Length: 431
Image (cartoon, rainbow, N blue to C red; front, side, top):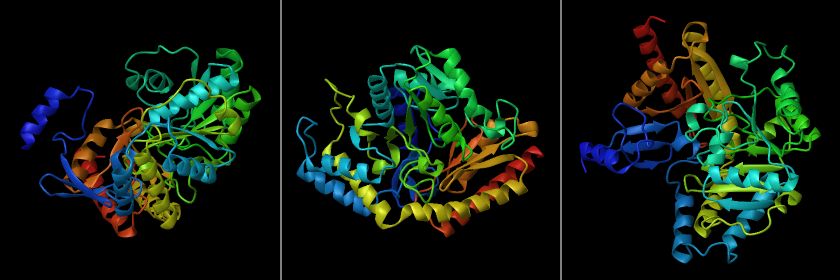
């Protein structure tokens, strides 16, 4: 099909919420490693990875080969029958996840993984109230949309009772007008009053991403999670850690993001990069919490032998190639280059993140969010052959999440394009 026909059929046959980046949407044809190619054969350096999903590079040979062999052997049976891939994966997850996490439930997406985590917490604590964070994103089901701390992602309105949203550690735009570290973590300490004034005093859980993804890669101070989790625990609640975007070595040096903050989750959810692009959702809990999920409950495709094989193959690649260590090394280098751009261009308000999950908040004078600048940045970087993401409550944060296999020369190329882009936009707007 020609481009015009593809665009027309997309409008005709897909619902309008299936939106695109760019004035002329990019029609991709193939990918390999850290690169994508459009239908005209143009090459793009991929620094977004299908929304933080291509963890070890497009069409990685070992993962593709193992997944294909499993498809030829056994594709689906449902969890009514045990199979080796699902058992092997569950055992591996118990081995590599932090703390006492041991019992897994598999689904198809991050949304379903979060639904499962909330259900586990509610059954275990016999409470339905949940504390989430403002600016968080939890998914597209009714419950997940209500957990999400963005009004524009809550399409059906606020229909689920018992969900309370605490202030998050958005230091660049502190809700209390304070500055870290003199703030004494007021955002975390405020959770105590939130529980005492807006709940029954017995929440089932606190759910949080170590680094908020859609929220714009908001990264809390090192003391934040110890403070807020201790408050939740004092009221009998559990800590659900959402590692959908931060898992699998992306934050650098550790397999999971929360390990940088030194707290142990009662429940952890994973998806996206777990299978390098294959649909998967994972909920893992401590034995006592996991055992609370009894009765008639299943996911038809959860634990599918093909997907389980893809996850195991992805973990194998991450471990063999020591990709958390590469993410740490390359993450320091990428951050150093981005900080250099911040010193050079006034439209960069803040650079934040860890490892290979780095955000750039784009602003005008007095921290005014510059979402219009971000749209221009996306167009110019696409023109130059670089794909990046955007996010943030105001749509003014550039998101950069290259595959964990990224090397210095590819970062140099991306920074060269970003430098050129910022120079053009700064000049055209006189900033």
